[in-house]
Image (cartoon, rainbow, N blue to C red; front, side, top):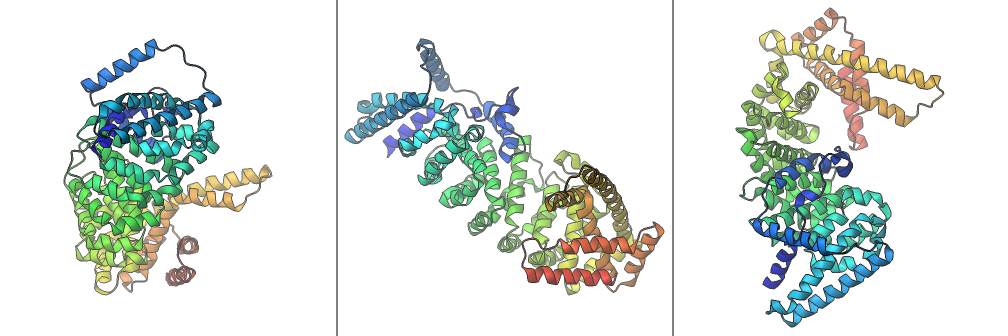
Length: 556
């Protein structure tokens, strides 16, 4: 086993520097694909963090040696199907010979050292295959994938073969390769390999980084493999690595990114994380930022990845309870009070934790821990310092309005009374602010509607058909322009008007009349909201919720 571990480390020594995954120089955009993808967006910080580390003396020597070899070598023959076949068969032969000698002389590395070097040479040559994804099928047909997975320390080669831009060059070749890798349980093997690497050794830390790059590439090309990958030990390894007491580095940042990718739109991985006490791990890691801002841009990126992961997890009702028991509400409430960079993301987490009927317990607990004292100042005044965190005014107002709407929907008895009393304080100043936001967003939506109507008119004039998908797109644009926030605000208006506290209803109608607003418009907005409610919920829930909202509207 030790001999094998040494062999693994030796091969890792020959791996290219981890910054090589997606070059980010002048032609970075071409090399790295669109920055919209999670991986592309995050890669820059990761590469820079890694490249800033100095080469060790050993690595320099190895590079010099390789460069000397390059100078001596004659011009390479052109690479085509037959030369790739020849290369793969040579690899198979050398791999077999090396294994044979290792079994024969397990305690005498000198006997198999030469075969080791020969094998390493052919592996280096095989990097050229990564430039020809249409020939990937040969790796599968000649059983090389199986042999590569047997070695598994050829991480840098696998990383190049799975580079996302290369995979998209030949979808067919990529599909064949990914299928073969998955069949060989590649993720389980990669995780086993990472478990025995020592990150104190730079080359082995690079090996972990390159391994995570392989997983990211495959997940980006085929998002469906996230569940399988998480179940093959990856989720457990990521959580263990994230909570390890080690200084912050590029690997921890990359782990947070892969975790967020695994949890996107995936209830299976969310459930798995919950069962592994992952909610507690996330809360522990985030608690560092309640009183301290991240010290670098990379650390802030990691913090946001962990917040994204937590928001994803809270989409699953079972995790809301784990969040409640883990005192997640108390932590988020503290973050809101501390006014650090984490405040914006904490607001988003609270919104995810309290929304819908599954958020009822969290809503009650939030009032019990005096959360109303924290949330209403943020409702009354949108903080100025939000540019630092890249959050818009609209985003902030949306989360705060959503939290208040969730509480109005979910709170019962004493807690509900405490919430409604807040609206009557200081001569109903919170109702005045609510109406101010109502007219702000109503105007934004009316402008968007005008633009959309103009576009529709143009399309009809050109004889184009307005199909359902076009109508959906227009509706999404209206939501984005502020319709969603407007719907939340109107919901709060009709809820407090139906609360039985006459001064609240009078104040809402008084300001509507004063500013030329209309009850009819509010009713129309709420009907539209009721129609679109309950995505992913059961038909009975949707129907009951629509009826509840329409009853409120009729009494408005």
